[in-house]
Image (cartoon, rainbow over all chains, first blue to last red; front, side, top):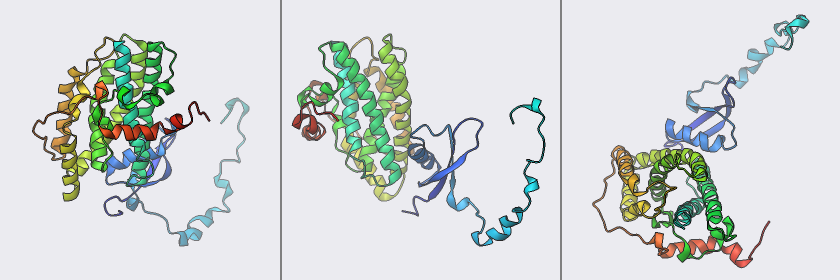
Length: 94
Length: 241
């Protein structure tokens, strides 16, 4: 079945103003049927207001074997988090 | 009573088709369509409930929606014969759904402006559901009709098999609160033929139409379906859980 109905990744935007978030995958013959299937499988409980589908094979992924060189160097650079600033009281909630 | 009868005809169409689609649950060719068909079944059964509840109120004899669904015999069911046709293969199921949705979508569209607020309310919810059923089933008909040699042959076979049944959709239901069904036929034929052209399907020559469903004269398949659907209430009357 993989040939006629390839794999698609599904992204749903829960509300306006939020980003599309990956929710899972499905098999479908083409874009229209993939959107239809995504609607039927992933939005039955009012999960979304917008759907994206992307062919899984179109996604380039980082190599898990290189996770060390990719992500570990960020470990000791806590100064990149904006947590060292005093926020004036009158700025309110941020 | 014209309103009661028209409501029962529509409610029976929805319940019988909804039950037919629910028979696919766990048997569809792929998980995605299994969920889609179950969703469709629930949409239709939901609309049937609203219609039965209103019919029971209009009748005023203290019957409930469950009484109407589970305690009427085959001859009291007034659905058109199209919706009781067996599921057959996927081509038959999708074509039956497509014919029904291509009728109900414009029907509910017209019913939005009904002077009866209950009808307009039911229409407001159902019209969106039918628009989706129509699109989904239409997409499949194009892909099967314009697909492989086998899918095209099966799709065309479904068209021939169901050809005697679609005209009955436009019969019955003469009352002020609901749209005129016969008036929808030209729009129905136009929208069906657009999809058929895209799907490379041939519209068959006219045949002698099968009808009688609106008078309770059904094919033998409905009795078997009801004996399955009504089993629990017949075996254990009044059972609840």
